[in-house]
Image (cartoon, rainbow, N blue to C red):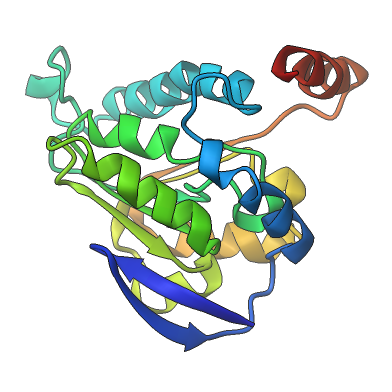
Length: 213
C-alpha cells in the first residue's frame, strides 16, 4: 500500500503495512473531501458535535491540572501542551469523524497540535484550510497511521484524542494500544464513540441521515 508523509506542505513517499486501516472506508470518505468544509456538506451534523468534543478535551486537561492553572479562564487555556489528534482528516481507520474541525479548534486553544490520518486527499484539504488562518502556526498535519507514527513518537504528547474512530477500526486493541503509547506518563487520552444501543443507532444513523440530506 502506498501513501505519503505530508508536513508543512511537503510530500515524501513511503510504504508501510497498516494493521487497523479499513481501505474501503478511506475510499468512501475520500469522495467527500472536496466539500469537507462546506457549510452544507453531508457531514454537517458531525461538525455540529464539535463543541462537545472540544469542551471534553479542554475541561479534562484543566480539571486534571495538566493545563496551567493561570490560563484556566483565558482564550488559550491549553498553551504549551502537545496534543495528538488521531483520525483528524475524518477517515482514519474508517471513522466518520471531524475532517480537521476538531484539530483546528484545539489549536485555537493554544496547544501544539499534530493531526494524523492515512488519507492524503483529506490531509491535503485540511492543510489548505488551515493555511487560510494565519493564527494556526501551531498545527501540523501528517498523512500516516498510528502504527507508523508511534514508532518515532512514543510518550511525546500531553494528550491524545481520537473521536468516533474506535468503533470502526479493524483491530481495537492494537489501535488503542498504539494511541496510549504516544501519551506521556501520567497524561491523558480522550476517546469518544457512540453507545451500542438501539437509541444510539436511531440518533446516529437514522436521524443523522435525515439531517444530512
